Image 1 (cartoon, helix red, strand yellow):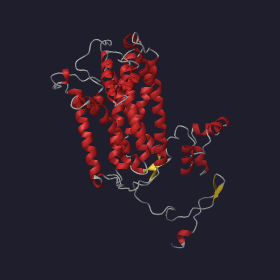
Image 2: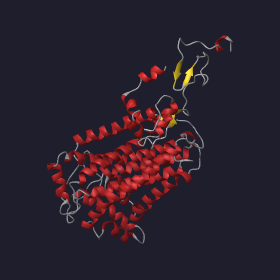
Image 3: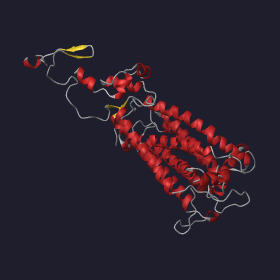
Image 4: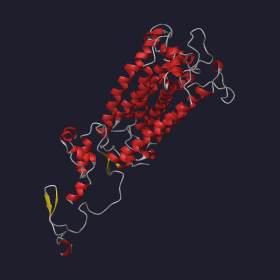
Length: 182
Length: 251
């Protein structure tokens, strides 16, 4: 550093104070924190405002979506419950449609107990089954492939059970007959 | 410079300097980053958040914001659900007519019922998608295994909440969906019949079932969900500063 740049520069006719400190001079030079650098992923940012404004936008987006759907679509209400009249098809709520579809192919002990129980237990144990510490998909091909297959099969079963099943759980094309209920 | 600080005072800042203001707010004036952190730290509503997060964690691709969306939908369900409770009696003789009356005679009744119904479906979707996103990010790995487990249980509780709520309108859709769903529990080895009877309060879906599902839906399951959610968020805050065992970056 040159001598000149370390010499305090007078900042005016009157002493300035910040709180209880008196500022006597300002020294030109490099920033105290060192060279400016580009922000990196591991850098820390304040939650307020950086994360909170994003959360606020996401929250308003979600609420606005609910508002729009609720204005334009009414929740279904069929005839009053009647234990003597079984509708055909009998459908479980859509999030159980995959299980109901499995129920039509396998013994109820498999489709109703072992598969859902196995999925829940498997998900809970996942961190202890998959001991690979890597997080990027390209270093964990087995886990990502297995989970993706599971997700695709489950979503397909849900769509089939929800929209492609009609009377007596027979196959229907949803554009011909619609039996999905929300 | 001191003049500058004074002129930048807002009404809120001046209120904070009064006797009453000092009683309410203990955080220092927000001059330095440290003051801002202290202000965050001493705020009740912000205490569920960390003060700082890694830059990558605020980006859309990191989480798709599915966690906050799930929480907001749950909030929408609490508010709309409490409104619906004012007009609903969980008995087979009244439940269905209550819903009809709600839709035709109650201010905003149909709209609030719609909000409750669609928020519930969207919440199931959001929670499931949140879980899938956390899988693909590898966020279940050490040191965050426990929060993944809490998350899986939260998904199960969300499904149970949706399922118990499905019966309450007491229409054909509700009645038979719950009949199909609960028939599966009868196949649990050895205790299946008992489980089903405990759930339904009888051999078939009836008035005891409606009361049981109602109590589970408005009291038991929401309490369980809130408790687990508090642990989930607390753990999220605590774990947000921890490095994963292996940081591969955001790709």
